[in-house]
Image (cartoon, helix red, strand yellow):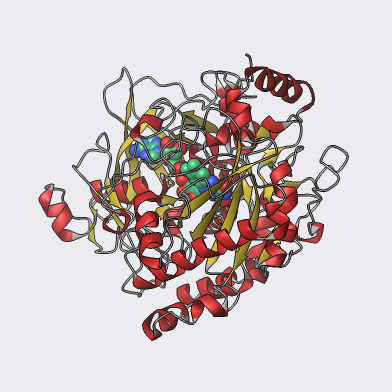
Length: 610
Ligand SMILES: Cc1cc2nc3c(=O)[nH]c(=O)nc-3n(C[C@H](O)[C@H](O)[C@H](O)COP(=O)(O)OP(=O)(O)OC[C@H]3O[C@@H](n4cnc5c(N)ncnc54)[C@H](O)[C@@H]3O)c2cc1C
């Protein structure tokens, strides 16, 4: 059944570059047309006097015109831990190195290889950090422009906010929100609420209240503790996934000063003898290698795994690594690829007596009706991403009392408004996360609630497997390495069971715990179960850490300039100073907006008022 191709034409609204195999020259060359790269290119090319090249290895994520690519519900497809989940047309195919804290499993880690990058694959939850989180970011990097008050205008700048449409959502599924943290003039990116609320989620506000987590107004006003329906990057006009391609790139259509090199792999950043970035060597299918020269700057937005890869293959990175692969050193920085933060969690599943993803997958007539409803009105179950209710908290006192003093001390390093746990409510079977799209039971309906670590202390890393970006980098997210992470996630798992045991949630639950089952009972058994089944929330970041220019852990400075070289910035999730609690895409967009202004100021480009 026809869904929709991108709203851009195959020539990307006139943005497609004319690839001849000859070198070309631009003012700015951006690597990666992903979540951050597209807004960067969009903002820089607002000034018609500059030229911008945008390099992307992938293609349209709506390449097969299937509902999976553009319905919110389609987010459940292709993201599981199993390698069988990889769709090589739009996914890089990353499999982690064996993760010791996760039973030495090799886990598929979805990353979008497409225009829109991982915004073409994500669960679309739009949520902002807390005030304390951003104060810590500002203090860590020694730049108060990152505090909540100062950074907020850049969160607002990208976003066109549409409040929940209560005329189509169920009466018992009212999402609260604070419109004052969105500006009427924002855009071009879309934030709204699904036009269908999962029936399961209606039981959650009361269920969470019963276990001590009260409703909060929203997750975008600088605090997150509490429960609520989150906002999503969903285009309310038709209920499509709002990727950076669908919004920012579409809005740039027709600009003659922006050229997109899609299906083009960046091979390395080129430096002159003064350690100044002067261009990018690329490989476009059917052509010999050629260079895209940058007269002003190269901006690296290849994401958490490939931005550090590109730095390393280009000569910026740890000495031993560069020596191993005989890469001439431009600038030695031992931190490139280190300090990876990620959120990880595990799920408990029950059978329920309301509709869920399981029925949508199994009942073909229901599925067809849902497709027609979504195509006709943008409503119905396909307009919902399946995970549509969240809660955040710190581990409560009764479960905290058994934590060791070392664990308690480690957790004290986080600001007081930084939650330790998030609960994600999914209407469907998650189980061991192997393949949620393929492993739904053949009948019935299911509810899964995952407990995810929000203040993780384990740190992973990424390094290169060769000097060639054709070979994927090697990474270990190193989940659950730190004893505090183990203690907190076990507590979170117990809280999920308390939620399911609440009188309010029992109204929708059918039967005993379906997965993993009550026989997993002691702390040791729960930890073992989590290690066998835990899964990323796909928030890896900080591998090109932002910090003070003289900080021994930094890779980029507060203006995202790569330390030790000139005219090169990293702007994406790898450049975060820290991973805020919750869902990071809002920060990726805001960072792109902020650094775009820094770049414009550096080169005296036309700077629009915020
Ligand atoms: C399954 C999933 C669910 C998620 N759910 C949420 C959510 O609900 N809410 C939320 O806030 N966040 C979510 N996230 C996280 C969020 O989407 C990411 O943090 C964010 O998209 C990262 O943006 P980025 O710009 O750093 O990288 P990306 O968006 O991944 O962009 C990197 C781009 O660079 C391209 N590229 C890489 N290497 C090269 C090369 N050598 N040459 C050319 N191009 C290259 C890639 O193809 C890609 O387009 C989720 C992520 C995933 C994968």
